[in-house]
Every structure is written in structure tokens, then in C-alpha cells.
Image (cartoon, rainbow, N blue to C red; front, side, top):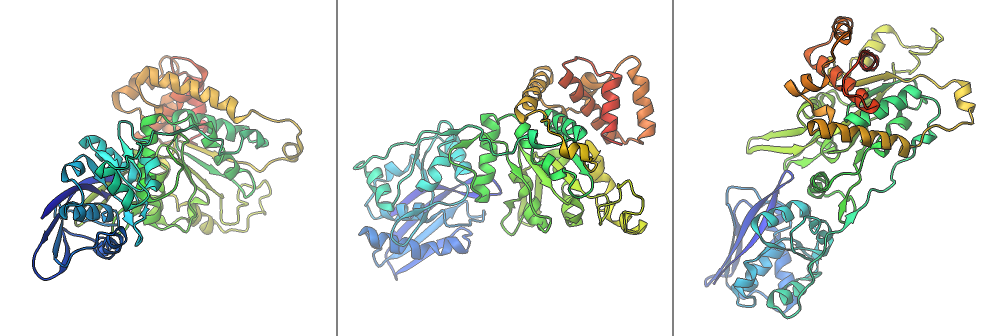
Length: 494
């Protein structure tokens, strides 16, 4: 007796379609799973046995072979419990084999037959959509999976409900996609006192999706500024929101039911490992860099991060992808994030204090601290600002500045100009398109040549200066980059 059920396994954030083949024959009783199963897949035997017995359809004493094809792809996790159980029921004649042909099934089984959620629901829903299949999955995954447009998604609570649905005795309702509007998760910019230059940096960074570095003494407001940046960003479109949902689903990190349009904001602790920040592990999972995809990755106390972690950020800052190479192959994880880093000017934090005797750090100690951010990494950061300590007038001022909503409106207008002109944000401009849209003309060219020498710009630094100047011009609503735009962009790179 033979039956086949379509399922999928995760490879990074992508789903790989797997055919679960079940063959039941005579001979000594046994239950064998082949096709490179991981430990959790091997343990499916006991969960499936108990769930089938609870259903009233225990395994007969026979030889059971389960093959997970393709056999050369490693399968991990408990998501094959449901398809294996359905395949055994179909092979025993309890389910119509034709009814299974139109579904992609996955889910973990409890011993009482309850379905438990697993990682990767959005990726598997995308795979089901590509194959033209409906989805049969745990209810905990159904809301996320249903966010994929054009996918019929059914979320039975138990194995029994799944069986009754496939038999046509108790038809489940297909879940409709739920779209979550952008939530006010982030505090308002109006709460930030003083720091006019810091607020200007945030506006430019938000408009062009530029990376930024804030340097200043403790308590100056670096973290306060950085945590306000996500509130200036527009809501995600459906496509990018699906990409973000796929990453979170593959990582097993909760983000919210349905399709969440809020740009992600990740602020990992400086003790995080390279695998935790960049991604990796024996079975590569997304790290914080990927969880910040289409959002903001904030590194507070940046020099305290391991040197390897900081250097590993160089690749995704350029390409928007983290590539994790293993002997068995390479896995690509999306990581198009906006980096914001904050640091003190020295270990004691008083190097920029007006009092020359305030800093107790030696010159060599300061140099070791600041050079933890290497030159190649700094060259990839578009905006840099020394954040001063607040004056007593700023601390006691009664006035309030602009709200996040006011600045976000200007950011949205500037982004609309970029997209209408070139089809992408200024941070993604490169090559001839960058020269065509961002190169200044007239007297501004002379200033640009002077800035190349004064700032000792590399080719990468030159391009990034042009991108920032183009963003400043877009915020002003002008079509050409002028000398004033270049001068302001240079002030954020000195």
C-alpha cells in the first residue's frame, strides 16, 4: 500500500518542496524514515504512533517505510508529523489519495493529536502558491500563511479535524488574509530636546534609507534619537511586508498575526554572537541583521560588539544579503537593513567634553576604542554626527519641537520623488544612474572636487556623499544637486 503527501522543509528562509512517500507492506513490524531526516524528524515516529492511536486508527503490525524526497536535501524540524500521519491513513485506506493531491501539509503533532505550530509558515505558503496547492497547517501558523495572496489556507486544530475535512465530512473554512496597519510602536520625536543636527540627520537617513553613526558622551541622547527613526519611516508595501514576514516565520520569532506593515526595529545586545547577529548555526537561521530586513538595525555601544560581528556587517551593507557558506552548500538570507550605530568617543565617554581634563583615558586607550570600528566599515556609513551634551538652556526649555508625524510627511514626499524619478531610494542608486541623477553642475562641481581632497574620499565614499546630497535635494523638492546640498552632506561625513 502506497500514498504520497506534499510537504516542505526550510533552507534558510526558503521552502524546499518535499514529497512524503509512505509504503506499508508485510514483514516484521518496523517504522523507518529515510531521506536525510534530522533528529526531530526521526522522533516523528513516536508522535505519529500516539496521535493515530488517539484517533482510533492505530498502526497495524506491518513494515512501514517513509521516504522524504528529494533524498539529498537535509530535513529538520517536526513539521513532517502531519504529512506522515496523513500518508499512513491514506495508505491504510482511511483517506482518499486523490483528496491529498491538492494540498501541501505541515505541522507538529502532540501525542493527543493536537496540531502545534512550526517555523516557516510564510515560506511554505509561498511554495504552495507556486505549486498551485492549498495549505493544510496548524491554526497557530494559519494566520501568517493566509497573508500570502492567492493561497487557500486551512487550519485544523487536531488531526481528526484534518481527516474529516479531507473526507468531506466537516469542511473547514479557508482563512482570509489579515493586514495589520502600521502600529504606533515607537516614541515620538517631539520628546527629544535640543539636538537639531541629530534630528536633521534622522530626517535625511529616513528619506534616503542611509546608514548613520552617532558619537557622543553618555546621556547626550544618542539612543533616544536612534529609537525615533522607525517612527519616521513609511509603512511597508505588501511585497516587502511579505519578505519580512517570511524571515520572522523562518526564525520562529513572533511579529503579529497577518501581514504586519510596520517596519521592523532590532536592537541586539552587544554580547550577541556572530551567528545571532548575522545568522548561521548548524542549520542556518536568520540573525538580527535579517530580522531587521526593510527596517532598522540599531547597534548601541557599537565598539563593544565583537570585531568579527562588526566586520561581517560589511557584506549586507553593500548587497542586502547575508551568504552563509557550509560544506553542504550556501544559504542566502535577506538583510537589506538600515544600520544605525551609537558609540561613546572614548571608554570613559568624556573625550568631547569642553574641559580638557575631564577625560581620564590615555591616547592609546582612546585609539584602541575608536578603531574597533574599522575604516572599511566606517566608509560604508553615510552619515556621521558628533552628538553634544545638552546645554542647561536645552534641558530646561519649555518649547516642543516637531512631531514624528510632521517629519514623516516630508520623508514620504521625498521618497515619492525618488521613486518617481529613478524607481528606487537614493541609498540604492549606483553606477550611471547615480551619476545621472546626483552629479551636480555649475559651480557645485568645483566644491565637489575640493571635498574629494579635503575628506580624502574613496570611490565608495564619493558615491555615498552624492547619494546623501541627492536626498537633501529631494527633501527640498529641487531637481538638481546644488553646492549647499553637497556642503551639508559633507558636514555629516567629516
